[in-house]
Image (tube, rainbow, N blue to C red; front, top):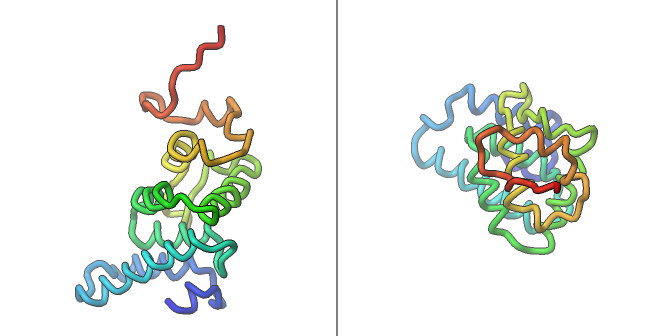
Length: 159
């Protein structure tokens, strides 16, 4: 884990996350499983408080999302972290995922096992939109990819 966190692995970090899931790390003895989760929480906090870190924010988010099977808790931490560094990481992340609008089909993990598109897009367009100075987030193309029936975006009166 130290090599993954410090960006010194000789393989893609996401392969390690996928292999941990395959090894059913959540069924390991509680102290060991708890220690892994604590490392990921500390890694995520450190990532949001530095710019840039040894591992990109996207790679870190991908790793911890795949390993834990959940994206929402990590997004909630990012939303609550209102620092210049977290906002700089957000700007970098947005620039990364909006290249060719990759956000609309974004899968995380070495094997693309976690479909993050809808969850991330909704989060970007609602919960942190006020912190993101990127006009691409206002593109109708992105707005059209929000899942129907969500209250993610208010109705827009074009008249």
